[in-house]
Every structure is written in C-alpha cells, then in structure tokens.
Image (tube, rainbow, N blue to C red):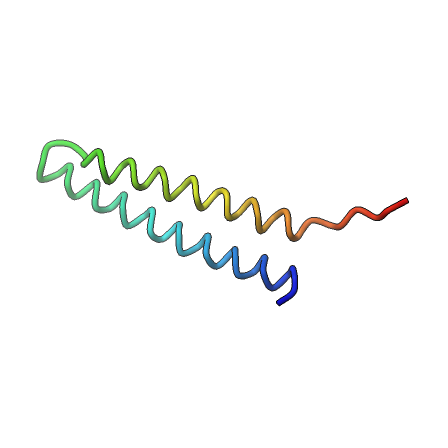
Amino acid sequence: MGVEDLAEHLSAIAEELADLALDRLRDASASARYEGGPDPALMAEEKRITRARRAVEKAATLLRAPRATDS
C-alpha cells in the first residue's frame, strides 16, 4: 500500500466517522424531543467522534502534501 492509497483509506474512515457523528446528533435531537433536552452522553460522544474525524482528515491531508526535496 502506497502513501496515496493510505491517504484514500484515511479519507474513507473520515467519512465513516462523519456519518457516525451525524447519527449521534440525530439521536441527541430525538432525545431532546422526548426528554426535554439532548442526552449529554450523546453530545459528548459526537464531539469526540468529530475530533477523531478532524485528526484523520488532517493525517490524510499531510500524506497528500508534496514532499520536500533535499537540497
């Protein structure tokens, strides 16, 4: 597996994490309707997943950056 392949794989993982975060937001929204407020545990989990997604996206971007040449 090359660097570009790994960057693509990380991008796919980032998309999966984004979907998972949206699921948590939907669940929190549903809990707000029935419980009077969003579930704090769901909100905390969504934030944690979003932070992980951003880190994975950053890693993918770093792998795609042009390599510096030695002078």
